[in-house]
Length: 159
Image (cartoon, rainbow, N blue to C red; front, side):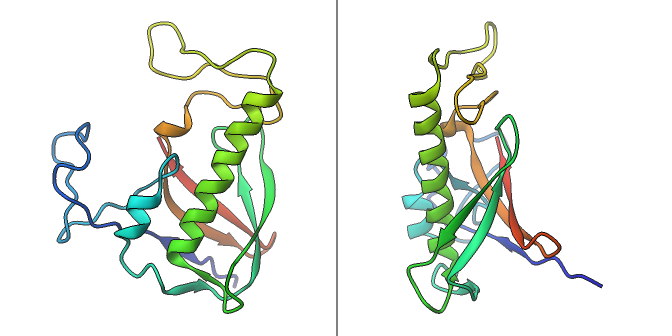
């Protein structure tokens, strides 16, 4: 039987950090946030619980990114540490990957991204990745799951 490994994140923060949080949402040292903001992960990583824990004892991994892209793309991420990826480093590397994807989409798309009329959603662009629905500022990393048959790590991204 194959086992799937899931890595999650918890970031402590001030109660007033997320001013647009839904009622009932909270984030504090006692109730850490499960989200890492992909547009600006530095504060989340700085406040991350067990950020220095090695969670993937490999120097290189393959990561599948499919949301919110037209189709799945697989990228290689390399750890700065021969012992493998630490939780905080993994979150930062994934955020940097998303930032590169969005920058490449902007460069390669003939039309700039706009807003869907009547919604706050991002229009689809037809660049390298065909990003649709969400700006990077809408995206949060929630988890990473290893799929052993493909030897790929699949990202759990929320919007």
